Image (cartoon, rainbow, N blue to C red; front, side, top):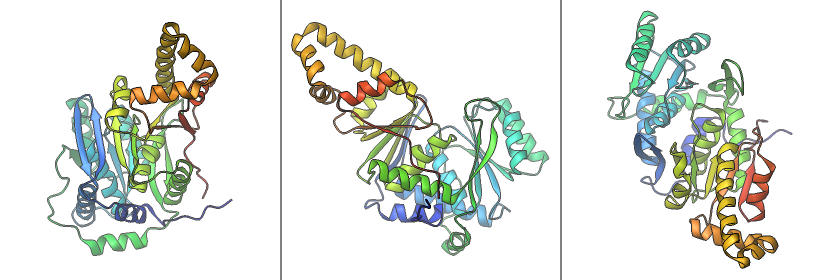
Length: 348
C-alpha cells in the first residue's frame, strides 16, 4: 500500500519541522561522550546549516547532486554538516569513522565523492594526512570538522537555498549509506528522500512522538538506524535528541535528562533487563511481600521500580531487524515498561 508523504523532500521536512518548535533556544542535540559534551539549539542548527549550505553552493565549486563523504563520530557539528549538505541539494555519503583511510577512499571512489568532510578526531594524524594527500592528488575538496563554524559567511543566500528546495524531487537520492548489514565488507546503498520520509512518518505515528519528547540513544549516525531514528526522527518531531556512548551510565541519563523514549539495540536492553531482574530478585529474597507482588501483580513492582529509577515516563524503542531474547521482552512488558519493536516502513 502506497503511503502519502507529508513532505516532498528532506529540505521541506527540515524547515517545516523547525517551524513547529516554539522556542529557537530549545536544545535540539546534546552529545554526551566520554571525551566530549556539547549542545546545539534548533536555532543554531538552522543558522549553521543554512550558512554552510550557502558556502557549498557559492564557494566550493560543487553543484547540486554532488556527493560529499562525511566521516565523523557523533558530535554537534556532524548535524550541521549533514543538514548543510542536504540543504545544498548535495548527497551525504555516510562512512563509518572506524574505517581506515583505505576503506574511506574506497567508498569515495565508488560514489564519485567530490568532497570529504573529516572530523579532527578521526583515528590518528597519519590517517588524516593520508586522506588529505588523496584528496589533494585527486583535486577533491577536504573540510575538517574542528568544532567551529563551517563557513566564514555572515548570512545564508535564501534565494539559492529556495531554488534547491524546489528542484529536489522525492525520488532523488538523499543519502548514501556504506553498510554491510551484519557481515562482509561495507557496500554503498542509496536512499531516496521518499524512503526516509516514509520511515519517519511511520515511526512518529507508531510511537506518538511529539515536540514534548526527549529521545535518548547510543546509535552511531552513519548507521541506517542511527541516522533515521537517532537523528532524523527527533528533528522531524521537534523533539530533543540526546546521544551518549557512556553505556554504563544510561540508567542515570534517562533519569537526569528526563528521557521519554530511549532507542537502542537488543544488547543494551538485555543488559538493562538483567540488572532489573537482579535487583528485583534481591528484593524478593529480603521481602516476602515483594515476592508475592512480583508473582501476582508485577505491574505494581514495575511502577515502584520506575519511580525509584526516575524512569516514570520512558518508553523503549528497538530495531525491528535485530533479534531480542524473549525473556528480555517478557521481563520489561510484565512490569509495565513500554517497548516498541521496529521503526516504521520503507515503503512509499
